[in-house]
Image 1 (cartoon, rainbow, N blue to C red):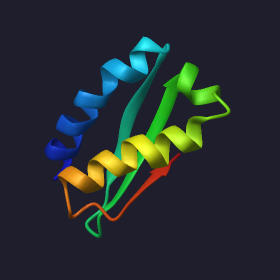
Image 2 (image 1 turned 90 degrees about the vertical axis):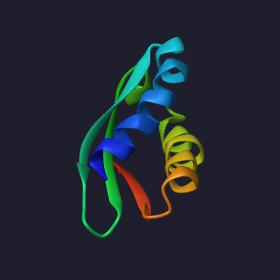
Image 3 (image 1 turned 90 degrees about the horizontal axis):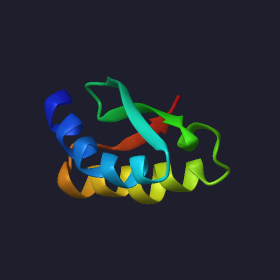
Image 4 (image 1 turned 180 degrees about the horizontal axis):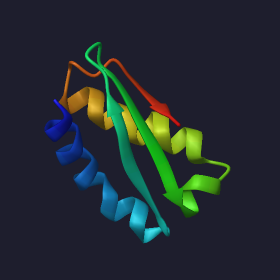
Amino acid sequence: MKEKVLAVLDELRPRLMADGGNVELVDVSADGVVKVRLVGACGCCPMSQMTLKSSIEKMLKARLPEVKEVIGV
């Protein structure tokens, strides 16, 4: 599943990079919890939680039903 998550994150990267940020995959657990780290401008942005939940988590859940939650670390 890790490879599938990385593929979806690669699709999101250009949008994050356009604003000076990026996302790193930290872990994918067997129970469907994905841990990511927002870096660059996204790491310190006050809207980072919104980006995490409304963009990253939403897209991962839509493409990969086995993803239950995305957590920022």
